Image 1: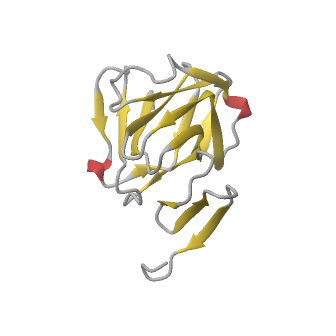
Image 2: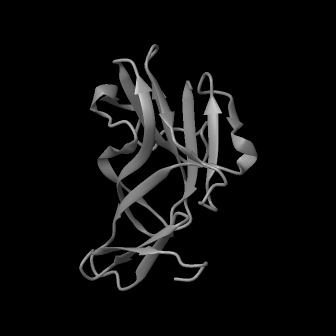
Length: 170
């Protein structure tokens, strides 16, 4: 895959510190490049251009973190696109869930970073997580539902809790 992208809707106000993508496998010894764009894959970079990490620093069959050089302040409801690509001769397989567990997500692919096509007819999503730092004094609980699990973030002590979904109820 030359370029892969996942659009998502920001679920709370705060600073995006890093994103994680589940990379099932990879080959080669080059770099993986990643970017955040808003609100489409063809939009200008939020980060000012691609960030790079050596593919050898990734863990196959696991969550891999892509840390923002500076946290990006995002607002609830904003559309953001995570874009991944790799050097020539370096390949990765970004795990996909089908059907997609994330209602606000749209997965895309591109051969050249200019023409993007929708994957799976919008029925699936690339597997990803977002890690937000919430403003001090926030007095609410924010949920991020990614299918079988939901995360609750407490604004008082920044605790993160994991809950499993039972027959559609929390």
